[in-house]
Structures are given as C-alpha cells and as structure tokens.
Length: 510
Ligand code: HXC
Image 1 (tube, protein in one colour):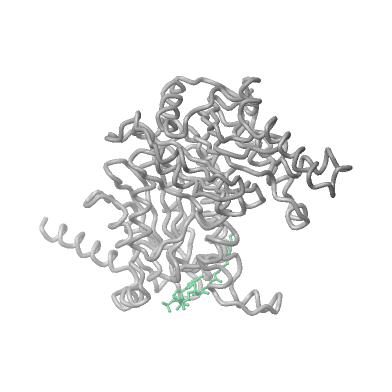
Image 2 (cartoon, rainbow, N blue to C red):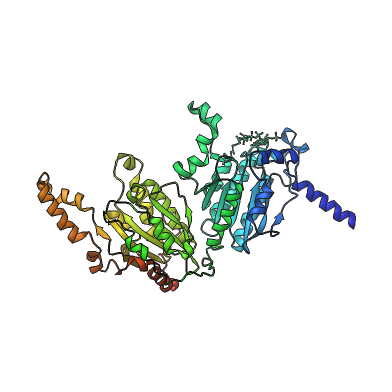
C-alpha cells in the first residue's frame, strides 16, 4: 500500500515540475511566476484542488508521442478567494510554451462548465504561444470549444482573464469574450498576429510591446481593463476585484461588514465645484468620499479617462460607479468613454449591481475624428446600456448636464430611479456661450449685448431648478449629504423589481 501511495506522490511531483526545472528557472529569470505559483498567490492558502493533473495530449505527429508531459500545459481546478468559490485555469509556459492542444482545451472547458453549473467565477491566467502547432486543426477545434463556453457563460458567471506572458492567435479571443482583462506591464503582450506576420503582410516593423504591450491595450485600444507592475500585484488585485462581485447572475452582490457610517457628512464636498464653471476638479474625490471607507476598484483608469468606472461599496454592498471626469477633456463623452462606460453598465446590470452615476458632462465630443470613428453608434451604446439596465440606478448631477449627454447619463428619462442634483448643477441643451451665439446670432460682435444675453440664459437655464420644477430631478441635495442620500436611495431600491419585455436578446448597436 505504501508503494502505491509513494508512486502517486512521485507522479504528482513529476506533474508539478511541468516542463522541468530549467524552464521554470527561465520563467523566473523573466520576472514571471510559474502557473502553479500564480494559483497559490491568487487563491486562499491550501484551498486549491487541482483537476486533470495527469491529462496528456493524444497527438502522434511530429514525434509528439515521445513528448508527453502530465497536465499538458495548463493547470486547472477550483479554490477559494476570501472563502468564496472560484474556478481557475493557468497556462503553463514551461510545457510546449503553454500552447493549446485538444486535451489542454478540454481541461479548460471542464472548469468552465463546472463553474457555470455551480455558479462561480472563472479566472483564466494566460502565458502561452497560441495553437499547438503540431496538433493542427484539433487545436483550432479546442479553441472553439472554449469560445462556446465563454459565450454561454457570459452574463451568467463573472469571467476574468489575466495576461501574464505572451498571448497570441487563438488565445486572445477567449479573453476578449470575458468580462475583464488585466495585463502585467513589460512581461505580457496580446495580439492576433505577432510582429513577424505584421512585417510580412504590411511591411510594418513593430516590437512585441509596441504592437500589444500593456501600454497599448490599457491606454490606446482599451482591450484591457488595467495593467499592473508585476505578477504578484496583478494577482492580489484580482483577489480584491473578486470580493466586489457576485458569484453568478442568480446572486446579489456580496455584502461585507462596513464600519463606515451611511450618514457620514462630507463638508469638503461643498467646495468641490470651483467658482469658475470651466475649471476642472477631480471627480474621483466625490466617488471616494461617497464609497465605504473610500475603497474604489477602478476599471480601465488609463483608457477613456474622461469617464471613471469601477466598483465600490455602500453600506457594505457593491455598487458600480460611473462618473464623468472633468479633469480629462472636461468630462466630454467621446467614442472611448462611451464604449468603456457602456460595457461597465452592462456588466453591472448582468450581475445585479446597482449603478451610481455622477454627472458633469459638457456634451458629446465634436469633430470629424469622432464622427468618422462612429461616435453616433458608440455613443448610442451608452444610451442603450443605461436604458435597458433594470438594476437600481441613482444619479447625481454635480455641475454640467448638457444636451444629449444629459439624457444619456442615467437621466430620469432613461428610467433613472432616483435623480438628484447639487445646487451647482446646470441642466440645459448646451452651455450659455454656445446657446447665445446660436439664438442671438445677429448680436455677435456686440459684446455688451452678448454678455447680457449670456447672463439671461445662465439665470434661466444654468441651474437645477428648471429641471426640478418639471420633476426631472427628484431633489436638489447638499453636496455634503451625497453619501447619506445615495445610501438611502439604494436602501429604498433594494426591492426594485423591473423586467424588460420578453425577447431572445436585444440588438445593442455594436
Ligand atoms: C507548440 C510552442 C508553441 C506553439 C511555443 N512553443 N509556441 N510549441 N506550439 N504554438 C514552444 C517552443 O517550441 C519552445 O519549446 C517553448 O514553447 C518556448 O518557446 P520559445 O519560442 O523558446 O519562447 P519565447 O522566445 O519566449 O517566445 C514565445 C513566443 C514564441 C513568442 C510565444 O514561442 C512564438 O512565437 N510561438 C508561436 C506563436 C504562434 O504563432 N502560435 C500560433 C498562433 S495561431 P522548447 O521545447 O524549446 O522549450 C493560433 C490560431 C488559433 O493560435 C486560432 C483560433 C481561433
């Protein structure tokens, strides 16, 4: 009996070594953790239960029958994060460069299916060379099996991808269909085709970093939702993110004990809005002063920075914050901001997370770059997302709410549940200067007259009272009581029950 037990332990030991000590050393030399070390950092100590440790590929081509490594380049299983169940797969670059065989794919599909069945998030860690070249079409079939599970699980369980090394070809499309993608700076990159193919096809010379590094995807393309300094930081932040999320669409968001008084008054907010309406201020301050203990997990901080989105808690329960950021492009809605916020709003709605929206928006970004880029369709995404969302929606207008952007930013008209304005709010079709130049075109050149007309317009429209008189705003609140009022509104809305008309699915303007 002892022999049998020892034999199992020896087999496990061999599997744990993956592609061998040399390759593990090379992984460490690049500043990367191994697949198993990553799982250890991600999950609660001792909670990992591995599946399919002994699975091997079944390929006989190119001498592959002589190279079988238990586990076949991906470590899969389940464990807990702060006591809550998650499923995980972690690509092992030391085994055939983490490339994907059919056997490797079936291991991933197994955890995806288990996670969907029991209702728990899936976290995928990527560090791989794409399709296992020796397996040909079987590898492509394996990718497609994973994609199918990604799609079927979308909106059912949270799916998170963490890119910690190369990620190319087939490997990029599974992350692309998950809810969030994060990268590690300098050691990871993502692209559909690598620099060599780019050179052959387009004659363009680019490095891995310039083509698909974290600096590209977290800032320019918006493909990823955040970039971290190293493996450790990324994994610790994933633990933090999971704490905000429900395990599935059947659950309410988790509630953590909060020691932050919901009645807390923030007098400093009474002076957040500068006297000059064109002076920016940091909207993040309002979010942090509203959220429990100022704890805010921001999504995509470096992309579309004119809108802030992320998770916080109020009275211990997760909420999604969406807020225009006057510090960046005056908080205007452009293509990037609209896409970013629309996706976030839809995530919150899928997973029963109430949305708190802070508005200071001068409108949509004008110009050919935006129009040619499809601002109409992209802006409509955010309009669509806020409208279809049935989760509790609480909105506070702090300053500007102009034009179509006023409608879009979770206004009463788009089924906002509780809509407040600060006394500094200006709710109008456009800013006073633009408005006067249009309706009093004949007076242009006569500075005195224009100043008089502008003052008249500001007195009439650049305030929250017109909207409040019509019931478009439920109340004008003191900035210092924002947390108290938002918390109360969310408490009231806990029993909100609204359903959209039955349909197969909607047709959001993609
Ligand atoms: C089999 C692979 C492999 C692959 C890497 N390896 N990629 N084995 N299939 N796709 C193996 C290498 O042979 C090597 O084995 C080990 O992994 C490490 O690879 P290196 O090249 O030494 O590492 P590095 O220099 O760090 O380069 C990493 C890399 C490079 C940039 C990822 O390996 C690479 O370009 N690989 C090919 C990428 C690719 O074109 N994949 C196919 C994409 S097409 P040894 O034994 O020496 O350690 C695709 C289509 C799917 O994915 C579409 C589905 C929709």
